[in-house]
Every structure is written in structure tokens, then in C-alpha cells.
Length: 472
Image 1: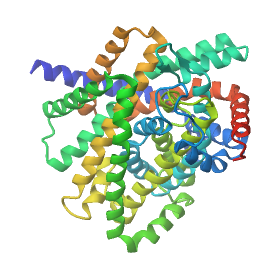
Image 2: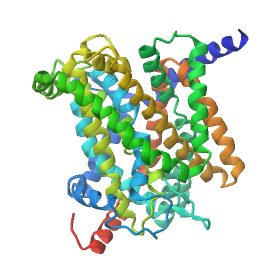
Image 3: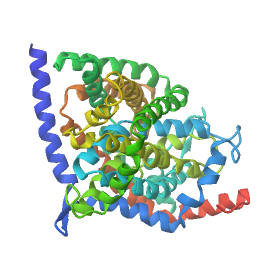
Image 4: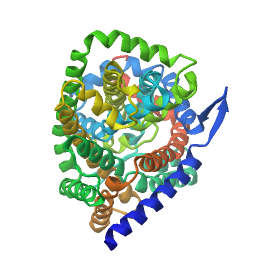
């Protein structure tokens, strides 16, 4: 009993902390009667800037990205730990997840169906920003004598800005990023929403003990894979990511097939509501802000986290992996988030009072009483794969802060996995406030560095294009 009381006390403290942190990070300004969060504008500005700076590389580079993914512009003996496909799979494991299922539902609950339209628009611009941060991550990565790789925002902020004559600023921005990341990468949201779906489908009693048992089980499974390092994670995610996407997309196709006659109306409603003054949460701007917040969390462009996985790719050319990386927001946001939105809107469950993953589950339930089991399977795979990817990211942050000693890595993994069960007992709004706040804080030092090194990104792009003798 004492243990359960301690958990309840921890839950109350977590709720209070989440509310205060969100109030600080999501400061907003009133624009035409709508509260627009400054952090959302900050991220969107970065996406538009790099789209224009790189002359719409998100459109021009699509074909090269596919070719690179198939091994056309890379060699097997290049330095690194992962193939382009493995690097993309690991990164997608971190981004394709509950943000595509619960996140879309939350966006629609807050901003109406039009929020889904803005998620797609933002995913399109996010492709350019993702390209930029991955190019820098590969260019400034550290390859150790044993062949292991460390890369990501910490390294390109420190080394890239030092190369441009700003070593002190680079160290400060890198340190800020690393400190924020250590906490932000604790993926309690994955445990929270996957347990919510399993509880709904399997009829678990909503007790603290059953929630903790589920959280502990997920933590133990994650530890078994994470302890093996980058190669172990890459082997698992390269198999898990295609499987989980296949299961989810197959379920979506069935739901849309059953409701095929309602599909044209759903598309019209999503597009029309995006530009409607009567849309939920304050018209067009309200729908945009709702879509912006959830899309940014879904594809993580500007956050820099996925660049940690891409940095481990086998390549001689930083821009080659940038082309692969721009496919990530397309798959994550443009394809999968759109599919989720269509399922929710065609079935009409967005008007049923649900606010999170329960909305998507209700949509699957319109096919058959047992069909939410398909969603539950996909959700658990999404949650687990995301935990693996982000656990790898956290290890790289620890390497930057505390060195490559093995005891540092093991200590971090114990903390990372040990905190996961908290997600199963936390309030969903609290979890979202904390994770969103910390993730968006990462974008501040990351984007400052990206702006300052935008010329380097463009130079690497031109160098690679000249190497392959083909203009994107």
C-alpha cells in the first residue's frame, strides 16, 4: 500500500510540473483573436527558410532519395554502422509511432478536421528542414577507432560552429541541447498511449498495479535490445518498422474500404475546414496551430533527434543521407498521418467526444468489434520501436556529455528503462505537456545552429550533386 501511495504522490507532482513547464514553453501571442504559440511559428519559419534556401529540395530531391536508399550512390565499404535503409528505419522507428495515431486524433479533437490538412502541409515543408539537419549530422559526426559512430545536434553544433569561428556559442548550444535531450528522450508517452489502447481493447481494469506491470514489461523488453548497441537496434528496427507500417496501413485500407462512399466527403471536409472561419479552436489559425504542434512532434523536423540515427549511415557524402532523410517526413506525416485522419473523418468518430488514441480505436471499431485488436497490435509495435530508437538517441547524448565509457551507457539505460513504467500511470495531458515542452525546447539551440550553418548545408548539397553528375 505504501508503494502505491508513493506512486500517487509522484503522479500529482508530475501533473504540477507538466502544467508549469507547458505554460513556459508554449507562450503565445494573440493573432486575430487566436492564441498562436511562438514555438510553433519558430519551427514553421525554419521549415520555410530551408525550403526556399535549398530551392524546394523537398520536391527536387525525391528521386535521388529513393535512389540513395536503394544503394545507388553509396558503397558498402564507406565508414559508418548502418546502411541507408537501416538508418532510415531506425529514424522512422522514432518518428512513425503514436504521434501518427494518437497525435492525429488529438489534433482533430482540438482543431477540427482541418488540423489534419495543416499537418500534411507542415510535413511537406519539414522535408527540407530534415534534409539540412541530417547533412550536418553526417558531416560533423565522430567516427571512433572501433568503427562506432557518434553524431547529431550536439556534435554539429559544437564542431560546425567552431569551424565557422564561433566555438563558444557552439559549445553552449550543444550543451543546452544535450541537457534538454536527456530528459526529453524518456519516452513515457509511448507507454501511456499503448497501455491505454490495450486496456480499452482487452478490458484491463484501470488500476495502478496493472498499469505498472505493463510498463515494467515494456521496459524489460526494451532493455534486452538496447543493451546490444547500435547494430542490435538497427537489426530489430529494420525488421520491425516495415512490419508495423504494413499492419497499420492494412488496417487503414480495410476501414477506408468499408467506408469508401464517404471518402470524397471526408477529403472535402478536411480541406474545407482547414480554411473555415468556423473551424474548432479559432478558425484557420486555430486549426493551423493544432496541426503544427502535433505534426512537429510526429516528424521531429527541427528537433534534431532523428539526425542522431542518420549520422551512423555508411557513406562518404553527407548530402547523400540528407536525400534519404527527406523521405522521412513524407512517410511519417504526409502518408501515415493522412491515412489516420481519413479513417477518423470518414467514420465520423471525431464528433464522438474522444480526445486521444480512443478516437482512432473507435474508428477501427466501426468495421467490427474485434478490429481494434489490429490497432492494438500496431500501437504496441509503434510504441516499442520508438522506445528503441529514442533509447539509442539517449545513449549518444550520454556519450557526448560523459564520454564513451561502458558504465555510463549502462547507467543511462537503467535510468531510461526504469522510468518507462511511469508513463503507464501518468495522466495523458500531463505526459503530452512534458514531452511536447521538452521536445520543442530542443528546437531552440538546434535551429539557431542550423540557420548559422545553412551555407554549409547548401555547399554539401552542391558538392554531392556535382559528384553524381545529376541535378535534383
